Length: 102
Image 1 (spheres, rainbow, N blue to C red):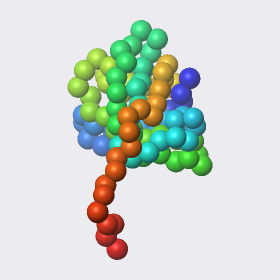
Image 2: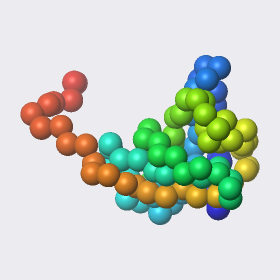
Image 3: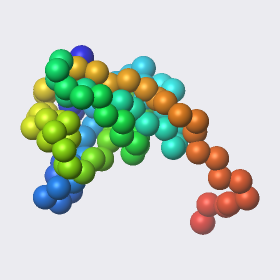
Image 4: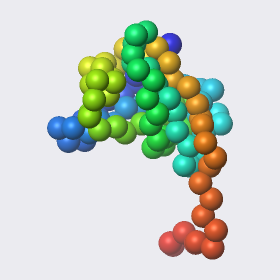
């Protein structure tokens, strides 16, 4: 099970969560996503990884509440656990020729 460590509403329909998922955080890269299931009977839904912390073993997701699965996810609170949190999936994003601003 994957414990919710932080939950922060960003506006009435968008929520940020930090999930304890050390194996996902260990391999996460920019541009990848996870697939979650809020409960045993829940739908499998992909979400982009918003941030990760390899040292803490956490993954941050930001989602908009638009359907049953994200409503179920939003109903969970700090200390609750997700049934599934699988990833990372997809190739990492590559940005060639772009430089970071100083």
